[in-house]
Amino acid sequence: MKKYPYQITSLEEYKEAYEKSIQQPEAFWGDIAENFTWKKKWDDVLSWNFQEPKVEWFKGASLNITENCLDRHIESIGDRPAIIWEPNDPEEHHRVLTYKDLHKKVCQFAHVLENNGVKKGDPVCIYMGMIPELAIAVLACARIGAIHSVIFGGFSAQSIADRLLDAKAEFIVTCDGAFRGQKDIPLKSVIDDALIACPFVKRVIVCTRTRIPVSMIKGRDVWWEEEIKKVETLGLKYFDAEPMDAEDPLFILYTSGSTGKPKGVVHSTAGYMVNTNYSFVNAFQYNPGDIFFCTADIGWITGHSYILYGPLSAGATTVIFEGIPTWPDAGRFWDIVDKYKVNTLYTAPTAIRSLMGFGLEPLKGKDLSSLKVLGSVGEPINEEAWHWYDEHIGKGKCPIVDTWWQTETGSIMITNFAGVTPAIPGTATLPMPGVLPCLVDENGKEIEGNSVSGNLCIKQTWPSIIRTTYNDHERCKQTYFSTYENMYFTGDGAMRDDKGNYKITGRVDDVLNVSGHRIGTAELENAMNMHAGVIESAIVGYPHDLKGQGIYAFLIYEGNLEDPDLIRQDIIQTVSRIIGPIAKPDKIQFVTGLPKTRSGKIMRRILRKIAENDFANVGDTSTLLDPAVVEEIIAGKI
Ligand code: WT7
Image (cartoon, rainbow, N blue to C red; front, side, top):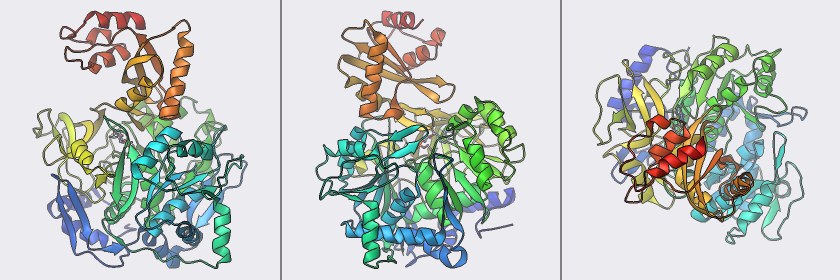
């Protein structure tokens, strides 16, 4: 049965909707958009070109996304849980925020932001752990029209400073610390380090969580709780949602690419809202009242789109989990499913593989019978993990949706619909309505027909497409719209099977996917090269049982290598400082030279083969400046 007017419930309906979405995108998305709350409706559904690029959806419309995520649900489902929060420590009490509660808190914090000088269009950096206040801060920014820029807690002070500088963000919302497994992460202290390089930051709002001692600078740092008290004393309650133009930026999210520093992917308001909602309702076949648990961190796009905006705009109950899957034991996810009777679990292959490693013991005594739908995201799911997920978690009765998408796409692009369109292990399958994928060869020529593979591009715009890279539109154009004319280039390779299903094979650019997190090799090399003694570095990915890809570093090091393990540890520290703990290399090999062409280009293809132990297939080395270096590196590895 249809729970949303635009929910697709059969394969025939999918085909029909898909056809219409491609032939008449304006009529298709215009009809869907009618189901949202607008302050003013649009003049035009769509205008776009991929040359500049310039994409506008629902132009002329005025709205606030938080009215769609909160206000419009108050009367009908105001007492339904919007957020169920599970703390890191299972002994601590969980929290439930109904739609009414969340609405009230978002309004309060919007007042706090306003009292602290935040205005429409201001970028606000959010660096917090996975607590309800993170969701509140994000939504309060949206309510006031400020542009949120959430930074994942695993990034270093240097990375935060880079992002603050890039966005010229004058406001920060953070916590004293965060609990993650056994660790307490000193978030405010990391922010303090970042701010040494960012004197333009005017205000830091600090929410208490771990209550470790923190420095509080007079005139700059204020406590979240005290600011809320002020708002209460002033009797400020409801906050009028700022009218936003459809194309006003909603948020910035930094992501790594094949060159340079991470770039700020900018998403706009209306298209993002409509597309995340539509994909949420359809891919997962969400039923009102269901409990939806996405295990991602809100610091990544998955958390933005499928912990917050997609579910909340659909009136769903979304679970926010503060901790990690393996603490206090590897049954943590299953306890949460059991405790809250979770209906949909959306997680990453890397988590599944890691939990598989603990065997079936952690599943004993856990009632998983509430589960109806499972989801996978972040990297290609290997068949072994797929079958384990299906058999031991879904008990063979839950469809698994393999959702392919990216930070830049904003919402799910290629996926099966749970129980509606066929699932194929390890295959994302069919494009969402509105998505027109194609495969191209190196020369940019489209590869027609089925049973083919190539570079994955998208030929037509969709509502939640990236609008720009913050303060640098040219970079957006170069990265995504210049490789192939009139196409958005994903950076992924894919195969199209005999029935037209897409199977994503992985990145074709110099970007690694480590535990479902994207890290650029150029960024990593830059961090390595900052370590004293490192003359030159080359980073490649290699197959890693748990992480999908591991980070392999080939380094030319000048200096004392008597204790190479100690030097390796030092280098890991440097990378942690420069990028963050998520970028720590898994393997470091010291070499005396790197395989370079006569023009000085490092031949990564060769290094990749060496890192994979595929020595027989290093290929032709005759064009190298010094072919002997390859033998040396191989000899140094074995
Ligand atoms: C890259 C995007 C948006 C999800 C979180 C990661 C890879 C993502 C799949 C999938 C195969 C996948 C791609 C993509 N990826 N989902 N279901 N099957 N690969 O977001 O950091 O922007 O990374 O993750 O390589 O380009 P991201």
